[in-house]
Every structure is written in C-alpha cells, then in structure tokens.
Image (cartoon, rainbow, N blue to C red; front, side, top):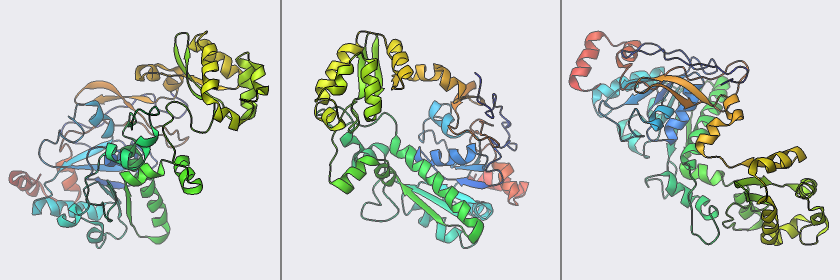
Length: 413
C-alpha cells in the first residue's frame, strides 16, 4: 500500500499490558484531556474523532465485563471504535469511584457521555455540577431524542431514529415498505456532529475562557441528514417517496444492468446529458421531446431507463466505465466490501491502517478520511485492555499506591 503524502505507512502500539503513556495519534489535538463515558456507537464515534486527532482520551469503564456494549473486546466493532485511548475502570456507583471521577473531571478539557437523560444528574456528574469547579469544561451529551422535551426519556436506537427521522420512508424500492440503510447512520452522524460541536466549543473557549454543554441526538442528526429532501418539504410542501436506486430529482441517475453485472450512472444537467447521449450512441435522444429537458426526463424516467438498460446490457461494466469517464460522465462500479478495500484508489488513500491488536495481533482498522498536510492522523495504539491504565491515571491525579490498592480491594476500580 502506498499512502498519500503525509499519511503514515505504519502504526505501532506503544502500550504495554501494565499501562504506559501512549504516543499521540496526531499533533492536532495533543494536550487535550477527554473523559469518555460513552457506550455502544454514537458516543464512541464522537470520541474516536478526538482520539485519532491526538487528544488524551481516557475510557471510563465499569470494573466488570462489558462485552455487551459494542460486542466483545476482540471483535471488529470494538477494535475499530476504541483505538488510541487509555482505559480506567471505575465504579461510578461507589463514593470512592465518584470521587476519583470528580478529580479527573477537574483536570479534563472535555467529557463525552451518552447516558439516557437524567442518569448523569442522579450520579452528580452532570455539566452544571462539574463546571462549578472546572468552568472551562466542555461537556458533550448524545441521546436518542434530546435532553428534554416530550420524548426525551425514550430509549434511543439507530433504527428507531432512522424510522422516526424519515429516512426509512425514502429508502428502498417503491411499494416494498420502509427500508433501513445498511449502516447505523443516525448513530454515526450524531457522533460526528457531537465531535464538531466540541471543536466549535473549543474554539469559542479561546476567547471566553469558558466551556459549555454541547448536545445532540440521534433524532436531530437524522433529520438534519435528510438535507435536500427535508428542504423539499419545508419550502415546497413535497413529501418525498421511495425511489429505489433512481435519484429523486436528477434523471437519469441510478443502477443499470451491464453484460456482467450492474453499474451506477449519474447524469446531471443538459451538458452532461448531451455527452451521455453521444457515449450511448443515441445522439437522437437530445432532440427527443420525451427526453430533451430535465422535466421531460423526469416524467418519462421509466421509458428512458428501459432504453438505457437495453444498451448498457450489451457491454461489460469495465467497458462502460471507461467510455463514460472518458466522456466526462460520472459512472462507477458497485463494489462489495472486499472489492472496496481492493480498489487501487482506496489503497492509495490509506484508509486501511495497520495496528498490532492486543487481542488479535497484526490487523487493520479503518483510518480517518481526512488528510492534513502538517498534523496527519494515524492509529498509534490499539484498543486498551480493560483498566490497563487505571493505576497510572489515578497516580496522575494524586492517588498514592496505598490508596489505589485500597480502591482495588473495595471494588471501586
């Protein structure tokens, strides 16, 4: 694999089984301390952004097996979400555990949590409480439906948000019923928006000296991601429907059969439409009243798609992709996941990055999709073992060896 300029070719673990400081994954956020109280996916997605860009992320875990959160530690999901972190086990239901957390919170720049609303207040680790002794604290909360309001106490789950947020009503073939998308997009987007909110708050803190409470939810993220479909409703009163693989407004754009499979074609605007007609050997379509304008192509999309597919089915996918791209018409393969990571451009961009997992040995994880010329990100360390850095981190906030031993004996760590 040849990574792009500035992208590291290798990544090594700097952590031992007994702890040890980690090499920062990037210089971009180096010096920031983050306490990670998150579970499952939306919260860990947010925190991964901070860890991958060099923040000192401390994963707070209960001193029990938490395999039910995000799968087992050796599983692909957990490994991909929790790299570049240190791990501290704390029982937040014990007074000793809470006191240790409060000490750490006084040293933190950022805390990220995705408890159900109300849990943090009952524990006494909410923003209002912790910011009294750490006014510069940025506290990020991700929930299913928001921190307040009529549905705030509902349990949140990605597919629920996909449905309530409208996405399932516009996904899938017409008449086949609602369809979820193949990734947890509400979870992922909520995590990314939370990370963006944290970075905004960090920038604002430079002038005010004060932190703030950053909030987002799966529902908010999903509604925002409706994007132009939401705007069609808000501005024109159009309730979009399922369109399958056909783009709802740009025609012809969709999936077409080839001699050896399928391909995507995207034709936008009349200039590209003309190039497409010539590439297909059908220049007459440019003057055909059924297809000559965008509105006409929309009205007659099914007839047009049938005519296109009768031609695309005569050649291979690779032949058509060369023909269309040479003409300036967007077209591409429809890859499975194995083919994605075998793609020469994906390999060139370095999206699969090597790491030495403590549970799995040599493996690869998905790297950041952003290239920075001076402060690139890389996977500097694998996910930590549970509690791997507990003694080290407690010592950093003033606990003696005897106090740490006593906490361990009591089950607080």
